[in-house]
Image (cartoon, rainbow over all chains, first blue to last red; front, side, top):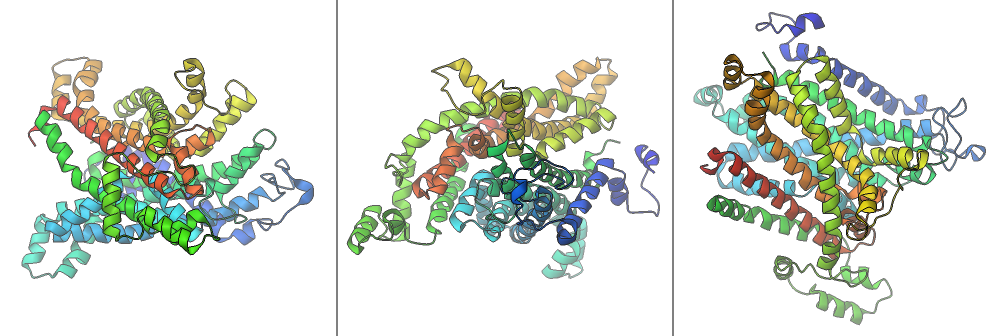
Amino acid sequence: MTTTLSKTRPPAKRRLPAPLRRFLGNRLAVIGIFVLIVFAGAALLAPWVAPFDPAQIFFSDLRAAPGAAHLFGADELGRDIFSRVVYGARVSLSAGLISVSLALVFGGSIGLVAGYVGGWVDDVLMRVVDALLALPFLVLAIALAAILGPSLQNTMIAIAIVTAPAFARITRGEVLSQRERDYVQAAQALGAGDGRLITRHLLPNISGALIVQTSLAIANAILAEASLSFLGLGIQPPAPSWGSMLNAARGYLTDAPWMALFPGLAIFLAVLAFNLIGDGLREALDPRGRVG
Amino acid sequence: MVVFALRRLLSSIPTLLIVTVIVFALVKLLPGDPARLILGQEATPQALAELRRSLGLDRSLLQQYLSWLAGAVRLDFGTSLTDNSSVSKLIAQKLPVTLELSLFAMLISLLISLPAGILSAVRRNTWVDRVLTLLALSGISLPNFFLGILLIYLFSIRLAWIPASGYTSLLENPGRNLLLLLLPAVTLGIGSAAVLTRYLRSSLSETLNQDYVRTAHAKGLMARQVISKHALKNALIPFLTAFGLQLGGLLGGAVITEQIFSIPGFGRLLVDAVFTRDLPVIQGVVLVSAVAVFLVSFLVDLSYAAVDPRIRYH
């Protein structure tokens, strides 16, 4: 299947839709999907996957090296690192998914209104969006998390707020470029109302750009959650979070480097999976990027 | 050119004003009474009322905002709640450290991203491109605090070549300053090199598809010349934007890297202020980092206009 794809053909006949075929032909993106399935499985089935309770303390195993008893070793309190990494997947993935969903809904709606209504509404909304985009992502997230107080819920709110402006910008740009197309004018001429025009015509046509952005934004949100909990501004101990595990590991780098290695790898792989998927989606959905 | 610069500067004023409103509102959203926060639970009502008056908290929000804005315009962000020193002085002390670190990091990132991006675009869809793509996406996905810890483990603990943390000023001991900033700069540089490589790859492969590039090939120019003289020049404009965004981001976003390597920079100031709930410092740092982003993007726009005359007539 991959061999036929490298020779780009004229528009395909009736098989899988072309973008899906392109996506599945992208090996890196498929790897991303696999990694994501592993992490999602770990998160959903955590009680069955993890051998121990993430908070259970083994006094005899303080900073034990990886081995048969503890697959990834044990931390400074003698807790099983593998179990904590597995439960940490719940925190990371739910933070990523929930904050980005919020950002997509709010940012997307703002962009839709700005692009569709236009005029002064567009001017005002986009000025605010630009102002938010001018604030460095992490600086704003830290300030918000500090103001809201440290907790997983507040971390998600903070990340949603800093992620939403990008969705607003992209949605607006797409709406503006679609609004002038013939098919929209035709639908309007046939008497389609605003609601029908938006839901049946505009949204399906801008969804490609939003899907790509969603995948990349989840990658960033997972990084941001890890950063905030690394700084102590996220979910509070003893709840297992990859960021706070890494922070705790800093004090024991010399004699227990595995304390840093496994949570660090977990963050890296989860973020990489979403970036690979997002990149694959962009190449598959955006024909401009392709070379004929 | 001057007209272009002035117009560009004026047009960013409304957005900057909104930034100031956001930054002001951020702190106003904070639950609780700042006066009590400063004086603690045992404070007498008189002391609280007096502090509120001296902080201007008894005035309307609009008045408070305007007087804060009037101060901010004159670079007066008030005084730190923890040690009573002026916020702008604190920022002026820390900003050069972060500026040096950011420039160092961007230099490293250019050294990586220029060759990698060009190679990736020229060899598009070959295994070279796929390997570089995977490396670039890995670089984007690698949290800089994890990369920093890996570098400390490798170079400071295992090999013991470079001290893990500490800072010496450039003026005091330039050699040691650069040595100590090397690991943090590499940490930050790799992350932005990954982003820049992706930008250069996509903008260069788009230009390589243009007719004028085909013409250049057709008239018999060497591939090297076509790429460097014709394609790269045009591909560099989107790359410049990305470069500016990265630099602007680093100025405010080196927060965690500074934390790991104990560098007394701008980001450290923010984190420390967050933990002591030092509101004027938080406000000042957030505002200055936004202004830094504006300045960098302004400079990028100016450099466009210098490079590409079409832009000036927009």
